[in-house]
Length: 504
Ligand SMILES: Cc1ncc(COP(=O)(O)O)c(C=O)c1O
Image 1 (spheres, rainbow, N blue to C red):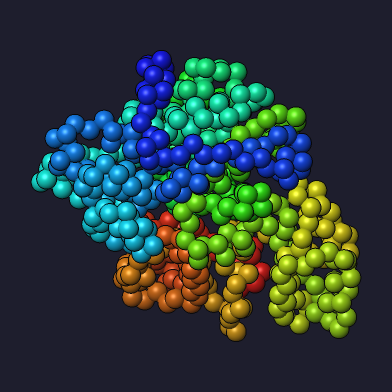
Image 2: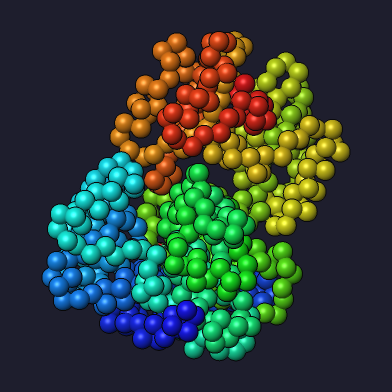
């Protein structure tokens, strides 16, 4: 199977549509991490992602009859753009089914490449089901995004180029993983020719379907998938990719949202390219590999796999970058409520750059300060700040890894209510579509009072919402049952220290 795949990669027809992309050196990162780091620039493809390779190669295998009938895919992402371009170049009709919530910018990008866009359903599953109906009706050929040997072969040409461009030295290649098409193609080619070169998969920690499959020894379907890196938000690793790569790859690394945001910034600083979060995923994994393995003096390649990001998302990415770099500590500090104590607190912090500050009277005895402080990466410096404050007698709560604090509390000016009452607090991911809030509210019993609501647009497919409710005592044990019925991802935050200190 390996040899047959390598042959397919060598014969893949991609260069009628895709280009051989360069590898950019990353001098700042290389110096900082004491390894030679290179970035394969798939953001420079005409559709700003590698997906054109697999889509074009798959289309090149169609018979004349299939071409005459046209092709179809259900996708709101980079596959849609790759397929639309491939079809246009071949003069074949392409239909792309997208969920109605797809941002206009993506709909326009696909239409501009000449494909017909059908908007159907609120979620991806409905769009996919509709694509199947259209296949039955019109005889279109389905072009899968990753689970297909010709798609894998097309993506494998990335590995072929890497070996040609950086023959030696070369220690490891880091590959972003969604459904696994890209890593399967790269692993097949690289391991056949250069088995000593490591191939390391990188997944977003809330869509780590390859890691889960390797742990279970078989493909599993994740219950929930986070969509922050939407290009790789896949619930189950592809069948063909998994069969091909499971014994070839060396390791899988997972990274979190903040680490991906930090890598978006790194890529910008090295190349001036603005990658999407999935596009920066493999660099985030590469950095983590160096930090955990202590690698030094090695030559490591990552792939900027895509640059199709919504401009309005950049604000959120920039905001989380410092946290991903571990350059910001977020602390809740309680200080005595008396003249001069604020000044004393500032003196204790010293000459550090303060990124955020809010002060709130708590009671006649004390006040709570929400403070962001710039620190050196690695955690030691953060601990030094905390130690210093504690030695000065302050109570300090470290909120640096607290999602509630980072997403909501730092933006909430409302403070605590005048009178005390029991409040249940939950954090949700709401799909960004009309009616999502109404759907939520209509699922709640009439006699629950909403006492807190905070929503912030992050330019992503999902909005982050914090809700506080006064729930009658009889209903307390059923709260999560109601939320399970709604189907949005949620987390209980009633006991979160960030909420208790600043809002309760
Ligand atoms: C930018 C980007 N990176 C990585 C991937 C993951 O590719 P695969 O699904 O082949 O694993 C995708 C998939 O669409 C993508 O769009």
